[in-house]
Image: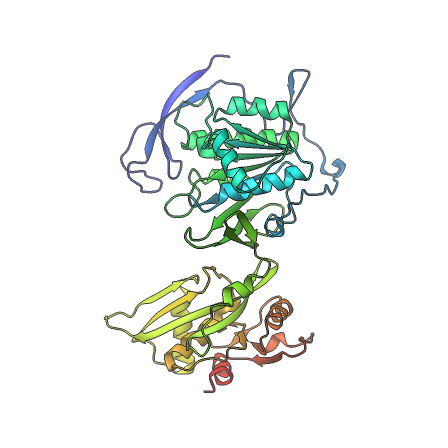
Length: 461
C-alpha cells in the first residue's frame, strides 16, 4: 500500500485543522497557535482491541452482550490509601490514567513512590522517563529511599522502541513521564504537538487494553491549569487526575475529574516532606488547625469530597466600598454564588449590602462546589457585616434557596459524624434533615428552615 503525506495546519490549543496557515485560530481565537504538520495516510493501523497470533493481526468481532463473561478482577492496591480511594479502590489492570499538574508540584515523585511500592509487592513496573537520564532518575530514587529489583527504569522517547521494550519485558504497570516528550516516528511534527500527543496516547491505549497493562501518563499543563494538548486526550484515557497545590507549601491535593472505575469527586491529601510524599489521613484537622477563634466572618462547614466528609473554614470580609460598583471576589467558591447569597440576605433578611465590598475565601486552598455550603457562606457574610463572631464550636450545613429557605442536603449523617469527631458541640442543619436518624452523643443538632432563623441562632439576632 502506497503511503501518502498531506500537509495541514493544526492549532496547538484546541486542535482545529486548516489547509492553510492562519494567524488567529477560528476555533478558539488564540493567536500564533497554528503549526504545520504532515498527515500520513495509507499506513496500516491496528485497532485498540486487536491482538496478534502467529504474526497475523486478529481484529475483535461483534459479540452478543448476553454471551460476554465478566469477572470481578481484583485491583492492584498501593500502600497509599489516599491514591487508592481517588482511583476508585486501586489500580485497574488495562486502564490508562492521566496525571496533570504544575511543574515541580510532585507528579514524578508520586509516581516513583507508587512504582517502588508496587514493585515491592511483586509487580513488575517499567518506569519510562523522557525528561531525565537513568542517572538522574537513580539520584531521585536514592533521595526517596527507593530500591527494588522489579522496578525497571528506561530512558527513551521513541514510541517504537518503547513498544518493543514493553512487549519484551511484559510489565504489570508502565509509567510514562511525560507524554509531551514521546514521539511517533511516522508523525513528522515535533514532540508535544497535537498530532504527536494524540497518536502516542492512542498507541499506548492499544498496548494497555490488549495486554492488560495499567499505564500512568504524566501530562504537562497550560497557564490556565488544564492539561496541554487536545481535549481529545482526556476523552481517550480512563481516568484523569490533577495534582494541585502551591509549590512553596507542603500540602498537595490529588483530585479526580474523570474516572470510569470510580467516583469523580474523590480527593486525596498529601504532604511533601524531605523523603517524599506522605498521605494525610485526617485533612479536617489540617484545614482547621490555624483557625482564629473569636474573629467575625469565620464559619466551619462539613463538605463532601466524594465519599469523604471534610471540615473546612469559610472566611468572609465585608467592608464599605470605595468605588462606584462594589467588588465581589471569592477564592475556592463559585464567583456567581457570592452575589446570589448577598442578594438573598439583602432581600429576605434586610441587610444593606449593595454598598459593601465582599471578599470570601476557603482556607487551605480547597475548592468547594456543592450547594451544602450556601448557609455557611451566608452566615460568614452576615457575621463580618455585623462584626459579630460565631461560636468556634458551631458547624453550619445547608443549601439556601432564593426565597431564603434552607433546603436539605445529602449524607448528613457522615457530615455530622465528622464534626463530632473534631469536637464540635452544635451543628446547624436543615430542619428536613432531622427526621429518620439520631445524632452522636455530645452534639446538639439544631434544625432551621430559613436563613433568618439560622442567623438568630448563630449570631443572636
